[in-house]
Length: 634
Image (cartoon, rainbow, N blue to C red):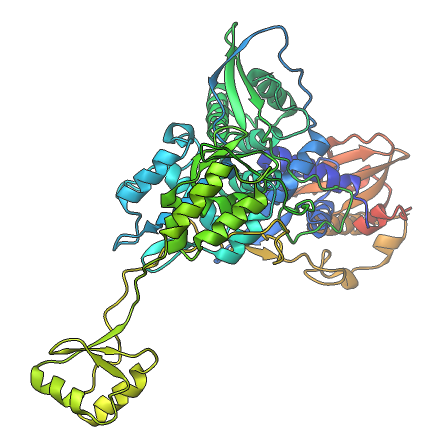
């Protein structure tokens, strides 16, 4: 494990300040070069950061390259350089103007239940049916007014509430939902692994996905979004928005953003967080805007910067989850109360047989009914199985009146059922008579009318061959096309943890959604030692004494040594008036020949602009970055 060099730490700080986690053109990296670093040292620092996983090099299809701090690393980088410490508001009443709605994990749960029960049918053009999207929007606590300042608007030809577009886009991005032929439908295995997470894990994943997928174009706004979850802000305590904006301006994170525009962008983000149940927005009696986290505050990963082998795989590592637990309470009036310790897997089981009423506070509520039991039966859950499952997971068991009602309802459910059969229809009575008289079809058909026969189960293919031989072949496809993607069954989980694989956030390359999608750029791997473009091209062709020996050269040779340093972008060690200095050549000038650059007297750590002629120094040598890094130079 390698510790980052001071040069790499300084370059990382400058990238973070200027760009947050936004990509920037590789050629702009030169503008971030500290004055005491030469070009070659900047390239080494960038390579060191890439190998540590703290900076990535991306490439567009046409070849343009961009540097970027990976979003999964920005929170840790910010904490390293810009630890924000603000005092909470005390001694003053704060009136909440944007109260927190239900948590986003709960709202996503409601969306998934709606899709599982009622589907979201697609129009012929692939859009969402207005009627269904409107019904879903009416169930969601988050409203379009929370989201307009952060998320892109729905297309003009897509009259779908923005809240529905955002929740569905998140479900698609998380891999929980996919678009079928005629409707959106659930991905059962991915859904089960998602439900195995606890709400804090879901919240942190959701916040991370939103930060990356709907990133602010302005680095200053992106800095604000990453600063908010820092440990400085304790849930339940109010903090002034002006305080954090002042911190951003003083530390350089505002990046020259005009104060009013920056404040409005921050307000839009806080309003969005209020809609997702994570934050509240209020105002003091003196007119200061304040915010506070709720108990749903997300936790972003804190990666150690000093570790050069930073993990670049899973974007957002999650803590180990305990086995699903908790139990719900069934009231005599058929209301089911779900306490915060009840796992999402058990809540999903309840959603399969009961109506979800409330998710707006810490205690959810469902309602048992005959209609819910009938719907569960239609989707493959027998009433007796539902009643047994409820009794096994209800704290204190089933109240007697509820148990009796479940038994009574069960007696009248499933007594009759629809059965699908294949019906053979003949063109006229002559053909029907021929079919009925066929000597080998008697066991395969039951005549139910002049022109119609019921085909016995499993006999369709054999029957088709016989009819084809008799010149009466029916079409290969039985019936027409189906009515579309059917509503999917809901399962009744047990209390044990999900036995399948743990949830893994889909890669951006595989994610498909409705909003905020960005072009996925190819990541260029960092070259290993001894690979890639040479830092000093043509090194073998120059005299080795220029690098190894500290000596005085003829004026012409001294000029050539300095020109070589300029071409390579490295430093030169010089003796000027008996003092040893390091010099970074930045510009060559002719007639008469001179060189301009940065001069650093030994031991000062300072750099000053200087212009030198060959006679201004005596001894000299090329200062290779590797020698400087290993402290082996003379």
